[in-house]
Amino acid sequence: MRVKKAASAVIKALVFLVFAAGLFIFITVIANRGQGVPNFFGYCFLNVRTQSMEPVFPVGTVVITKKAVAGTLKKGDIISFYSQDPAIKGIPNTHRIYSVEKKENGGVYFITKGDNNDVQDQYPVYPSEIIGVVVGSVGSVGKAVSLLSNRYVLFFVIILPLAVLIAVEARNTGKMIRGKNDEAEKENHPKDDSEVNQ
Image (cartoon, one colour):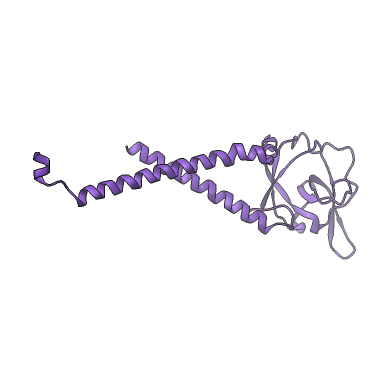
């Protein structure tokens, strides 16, 4: 009985955590709509889709990018940014800083290059286009992330099992409440001795 109660409590906690995380992500995405890549406490997660940063970041890697001030960036840092290249304009790109250039007014801009590319990027990167500096990565989960972006896969892998889990928990909670009500009813209306002796 104790094991069942403990398992039920764990399942309830997991359902709550999944729901809370989903709600947080949903609110964050809505709040960031039209403002670029959603970030969570200054961090965002980007899927590598090309071979330009191999072997450091193979296709399918998810890079963890942290917001950064342009003045703190230096040659050799790997940054994520919105490229001005017409072929990928507005799409997040992740390359290494090849050089830091100074403008006449004292500002800076960056020349970037993919580690696996023969030449540096044609278009410079300005501070306003920087998403952040790469601080980590998770290998080979990008394909799973891309797969989960498919609404049908998302439904069968996450939403449907979660709905079933919630339904089962609701049924178990209902049984538990009914059981407590039955016990309370018995305590309030005990059988008298004459009924027991017959």
